Image (cartoon, rainbow, N blue to C red):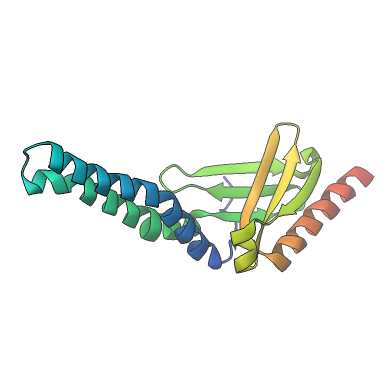
Length: 159
């Protein structure tokens, strides 16, 4: 098996993923606290039983905002070789994808509102089997990666 890919995502990805994790966890946190309060009012249970859903919601919030973004950033790696793009991602289950450059049909960059706020972009490249992406690169690096993949796929066609 080949060595793991050498390139990492931009460190600002962790901050972006923390914000997204917090935004995704807010409804759960509100539901856990609100549901616990309603449960306490409607039933005759002890305070300690009532607090369990709220504690579970807070623990999940900490996992989504503090732990997962750091682990995700440490695992996410990529490398663009002369014949393939090598992607590695995942926290518990690590996925490794090798995409032959000869199979890539086109490549582009995307940047959502939060990504633009942090100066980040995602490179997306398409094959007949579907899309693959390298997320959270700095905008200039993403443009360079996009151009490099495009040039390498063009060079492969010229052979």
